[in-house]
Length: 294
Image (cartoon, rainbow, N blue to C red; front, side, top):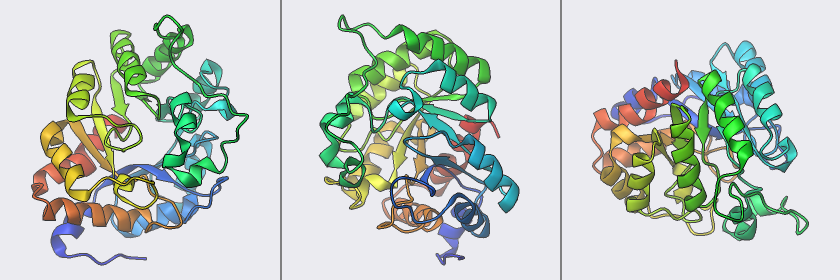
């Protein structure tokens, strides 16, 4: 379906890249499958998408969707328990399959497991028997497995993303990843109320070596128990700057609009809230293209 927006929104939606979408098949209900998602993005003039799954790598299915839809679809791997946690072998094989992004634990991050009520639909598959994953040792140092993973990510020129770990873990991991030569580092939805970064935290993690802060529209929707105010999201973007930011949707939930429509809504609200068109273009097209290497 071709979504209808005014010409200013349509001009920015065309050529945009959404690096954070959840699609079917999944253990959670999803609005569109990989191919449907790709065809929708293509019909609405987008340039590319990246699909994410909390439990399985998505690089292989992204390749199939690319072939079927004749549209660029990328994938990645989230280092949750179903992928072996901090598992260098899973990372290596996912990257060989073409994965572009490696997320630290998301639904199985210890912090998220303990605060799972903040995203109720994700909590349905996180049982009481799940022991959450952490990135640090009892003495506060980073786990050695991560240094091996950093090397693999660096060699593949892939993206390291912080996932749902604490901001303290994320800061340490970003610092060490950057020291080890990882060039592409994304801080995953730092504005989300359940990870709770302040603007000062965001600026600090950029100084530690993060490439971009990923601001997701999902953070203002009823998908989360404590949604961010729309104006607050754009205040954050203004404070940290477009050059350090990516706008993505984190779409795919049955209760939210399709990803291409959601990206259009995000762009529309950005314009309403005083974000210049050139900055929006940078955050929805230029910066995502840079981090994906396309």
